[in-house]
Length: 204
Image 1 (cartoon, one colour):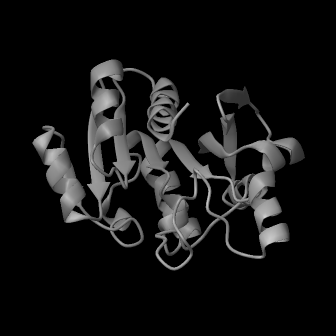
Image 2 (image 1 turned 90 degrees about the vertical axis):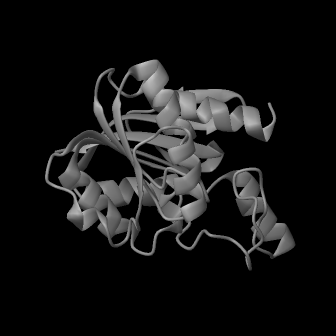
């Protein structure tokens, strides 16, 4: 499975977690690919927030309802319980304040969906141990000096943050190569072997 096929599969997994006809906010929606899939396959009322003007332009060209904004600053403008699902896909590691963004998401949405690369994966650990340098992998493809990622985390780190924020894991998908494992409470094996993870969360 190449990187593009993996990316498309990840978006499909996220889309499958969303109830048809829901109100959805996609934070850091990029070129709008996920929003388009959600609209086509799940018939959602979708909105997007995207930092880059290039991304906003691409979304508008797709006919999507997207505004330019910063997840670290502009989520405060959204009303409580305004959405059924708030999605942060492959974006949390690029936020300046992941905990603050998650608190806003918890307030805005009934459910949260968060996906991220797992920095605890054994390949990353091995690269650090043997190479002594910041790893470059399929899921973390940038070199340390030009990466948008500023708060990398492991599956275990994220579980701890969810506990702090009183968020309950409804489902967690652990992705490794072509395999997907469902884990209601991810453990050490997931922290070691998952390359990426997708969490469906709700308020306690």
